[in-house]
Image 1 (cartoon, one colour):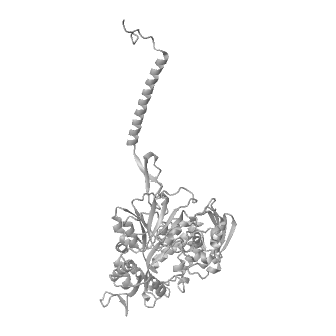
Image 2: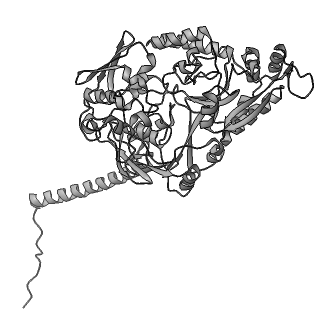
Image 3: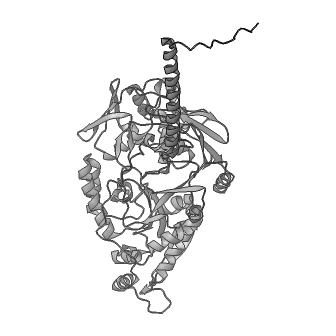
Length: 583
C-alpha cells in the first residue's frame, strides 16, 4: 500500500488579497527601517562634524581671598572703603543712586530723580523692589535710612558728616521721597549712593547702636547678593532671589579671610582660592607669567602727588611758581611708574582721572625735561656757586625734607624723586613717617615742607576741601596753603550748580589754572590689579571707581560649562570700547 503524500503536489492557486497586502507591508517596513537608520547615521555624522562651543553652565562656588575679617557693615561706614567691609557692602546694599564707570551719579533703586532750585531733590523709587527677605522696598525705608543719621545721639560719632542733620527729609507717597537742602550743594547727590536699610527690621534699634555695632549677624539689604553663612574664616554669599533679572551662573561667592597678603597668595598657590582681591605692583610681573592666573587692571580714582607747603618759613622758595614747575620737569615720571609700580600706573598731568566725567586734558604739561628744569631754576636765581651739587640763593640752600609714608613702595617713590631732583641741583631728604603721624604731626598743623600723598577722589570731583582758601587753616584740608581768588570763585560756583555742563566748564578752568600754578606736583594715577584663576571664564573688569566694584560683571562669570552647537550659543555680552579698560 502506498503511503499518503504529506504535501499536495497540485499547483497552488492565486494568492489571496491578504497575502499580497502582508508582503507589501513587510517591504514598506524594511524600507522605512532602512531609511531611519540612514537618517540616524547622517544626523550623527552631522552632529559629529558640526562646530560646537563651550557655553557657561550654572554651578560652582567662587572663592576669593581677602586680607582681614569683616568688622562694620553699616553702609555709612563700609560703603566706599577698601577692604572686605567695602567688598561686602557693595554686594549687600543698594542706594537710590549709584556711580557709573565715569564717576557720574545715576539712578539705582530710583527710577527717576529731579532737582529744583538747585537744592530740592525728588526721587521716585522703581516698582517691585524687594529686600533680601522678600519684603517690598518703599519710600518709608529711604526715609528711615536717612533720618536715622540725623539722630542727636550720633552727633559725636567721629567721621559721620554733620551735613545729614542740616537736611529735611519728606516722604511724599509710597514711592516718592523729597530732600531739601538749606542751600545749593551739588556734591550732595553723592550721598544718595548710600545703601538703604529696611525699616521693618531695624526700626526698633537705637540709632547709635545700629550705626556703631560690629558685624555679628548677616545684615539685610537690597543688593545682588545676600549672606547665607559666616564663620571666623569665611563669609558665603548667594544671589538674592528677589534681585530681579537672570541669576549668576556661579552658585555662590565666598570671601576667605587671610591674616596678611602673603598668606592669601599662599592659599591661592595651594588651589584653595579662585581669586585674589588684589595683586601688589611688586608681584604683577610674576603674576603675568603664571599660566593659572588671569590679570585685570583698571585706573583707580585716586592720585599720587607731592604736596608743597607754600607757607612754611623753612621753604619760602616753594612760593615761586618757576621753582615748582622746575621740580616737575625734573622727574622721570614714566620711569617712576615702571620702576616702583611695575608699570601699574598712568602718568598724571592733573588731579582728575581720565575716566572721570569732569576730566579735561591739561593745556600745560610737564614732560621730563632736565634742561628746561635747570633753566627755570637759574632764571629764579638758584645757582650752584660752591660746586657742592646743590643750588643756593644767598645763604639758603635749595633743600627740603620730603615726608613719605613708611611702607616700602612710598619710600621707593621718595628715593626716585630725590635722585631725579639731585640731577638738577635740588636736595630732598626723604623722611619716612607713619600715616597717622603724617596726618597728625605734619599735615594737620602745617609743619611739613613737602609730603608724598595719595588722595582718593571717588564720585563727585569737588576739589573745594583741598584747594579753596577757606580750607587752608584749622581742620581744612588745603594743607599746601594755596590761595587763589579765581580758584575760590570757580570752586564756589561749581558747588552751587547741579548742571553738569556748567560744572564741567568750571572744573576745566580749575584744572587749567592748577596745571600752570602747580601748588602740588601730580605724579600718577595708580592701577588696581585683580587676579582670577583661569578656571573662571568670562571675567571682565570694566573701569571702576573703587576695587569694591570689581564684581560688576559677576553675573557673566562661570566655573561650569557645557558643549552646544555653535548656532545655539548665546551672544557674547556687548562691550563699549569707550569704557572697556585695558591698560
